[in-house]
Image (tube, rainbow, N blue to C red; front, side, top):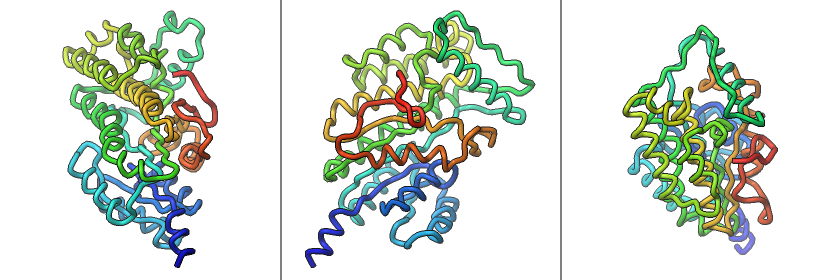
Length: 316
């Protein structure tokens, strides 16, 4: 009896959002492979259940369970929290992977390649302010205010909702871990808006309220029109995605300071071939998930409050 209780208390439980395909699906597989019991979630119940059934073919059935989740819906999150509370009584690992790019991509996806390569050049440039980005592809990246608002709501606000809802269960864990899936496109070098860069770059004075102010200012400016937003220093391409990921990175730093006994990090998995990238990425989902899983399984003396790109720590 004591051995059974000990085994139960040492079992780790994880929730992974956006788990029905791509990186999220692979995160679940790799966590289960480490003996973690995983709640794989997806907005579309049918697709999510189909994905979990595929995973169950490789593992004991108890290692993978499905629950519907829409991170934009507070009631959906509450339902998931109730499920985890009843079934497991605690949570050890929260991986916030669900996200959208906030764009309509016209063409074969090569324009996405071009934008990422151009923005990567800006990040490593010593004088990024002088480097203009002008895409030459025949494709197009189309942003509307509705898509911008949705992107912020899912990528940033959805991450916050998940963390806030699961904090009580995470605090019951002996080794709580939060991994927020981010992107190098959230690098502050890609934000020319003076207020945003000043607020988000100051780790010591960061607060959730200040990050919210930046996000709300962006939404207000974009609602006036994309040209006005660009004139105020907001990104020209994939603006909502970049702002949302910069906000997620800042939020991660705040959480790590607030909960020093947790290991909380954000990570860019790299440019991965998924439906989201129209399968023009450079890495496989397996490769993209690998470092996310490593952060989810960090030892108690592991790093916290950092931004990783694959295996490397990078500046915010």
